[in-house]
Image (tube, rainbow, N blue to C red; front, side, top):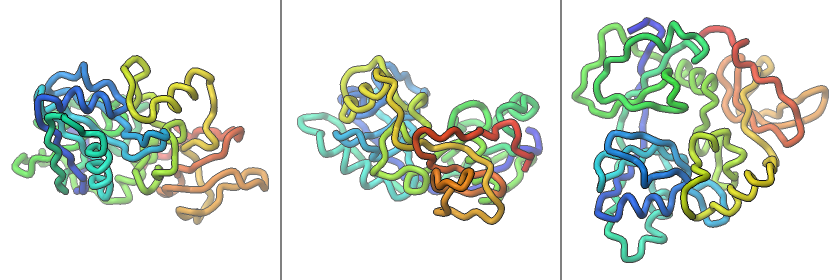
Length: 270
């Protein structure tokens, strides 16, 4: 494994849904197509309020035809369970919540650098993370030994890798007052060919009409000394707010109608 790879310990809230109705129930509640998932498959999904606002950003792993593992950012497991339980009437599915320590395996190179992602990845049990483009994996099992060439990284490296991937964190870049079109993950987390689910009406209406959200999560070059919560100013106008800052790059919520040049490909190496 290339020296560009590193690992960092992370906490995840893990919701396990088990039972004969687990697949059909999750399919009816999540924005992603769950019905077609086979054991071993992993997909990203949103869990929405009936109004269309975001309750949780989830990674769904099909462990078996009657067992699904949903992991999300720490602190959002309880609300995920509460939301899933809200409509669980006469459904054979048990829901269990745990807080687990995982190992996030990342690279300091971007997806455009094929030398990073072409390296053989031989850690058994690792599942794709973030945008599933070969630069991010997570592994839960504490019994698995990582390759000696895989160094331990830092939180700042993890943050910068996340900004490079334009990957949001619940409670940081996404709040429960936001709608899917603001999150930058609709293309990964929403199926537009599945059946109904709570919140679908808003998502489908905006997509069919080509509507833009009031603001959108963007990847930007930030000004020197920028901090989370600072305003993004372009040509003297306040156009947004920084949500994650990692060195010279950041994620920011930018208001509708403002053109921001995406720095991907111009970002200096870590």
